[in-house]
Amino acid sequence: MNIDIKIPREYKKYTPKVLNELTKNGYFDDVDEIKNKSHILENKIKEEFIIKKTEVIGQWMSGGADSSILAYMLCKKIKEENLNIKFQPLSVRRGRGWNPIYAGHVIDFIEDELDFKMNDHIVYYPDINDEYQRETKEFRDRDMENFNTGKIDILYSGITCNPPEDDVTISKNKERTRDESAERPLESWSGFAYYINPFFKINKKDIKKLYDKYKLTHTLFPITRSCEGSDYETGNYTFHCGKCWWCEERLWAFGFLDQPAQEFIYD
Ligand SMILES: [Zn+2]
Picture 1 (tube, rainbow, N blue to C red):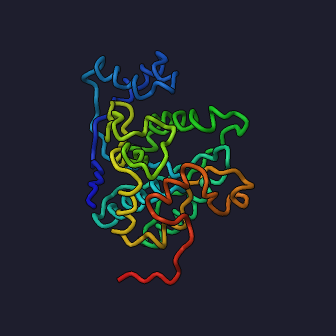
Picture 2 (cartoon, rainbow, N blue to C red):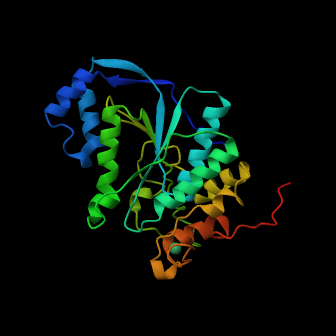
């Protein structure tokens, strides 16, 4: 399984002056439109770019299997290629507050495994009573802020695609935007924001192959968490419910949810 994870060493960004003007004119006020808007802007302003060296790459980490293996691969690449680039893990405490905690475990594991130091984990705490803010808008708000302030140069996501349409062994996820056929760019660049989504065209079974390739199926995978079950179905978020779609997908791809096979010996 060869997935090319690319880390550009430099990229073009609008000059601070252009960014200021755009901000003043309210171009970035509607954060929901951030990606679309930045493409429009790209056509409007052609000249005023600076070449910026990539210093920090960021990634939203949910503690799930997909974002965890991507973080591992990125950190491994930085280390092996001796790149002068920092890795910034980011998480949001969502409605079920376990994401940052599981992401924290994953970060500790990767740092130990690779003998690699990430930047300190940043966790955002939006209003827990505001569902739209905590599940959706918080991510975009913080993206805007982090691209604007230069805290990150490139933002990666570990989002995968749904299982193949014709696979009858798993039910359909409700997020149609994750379908194999959905038009989603692996890379989206504008003078303002730069996103790379290396897993947009691969599904959870491909993710399993990556875990196998790096011999992490019985070490890292079991400490990740994808479940959206409720507190009473999951022992207050300590184990997988085995019933929600995300558990179903995990079983479909890996054959088990989270029980580490202690006796497993790699050949
Ligand atoms: Zn579940």
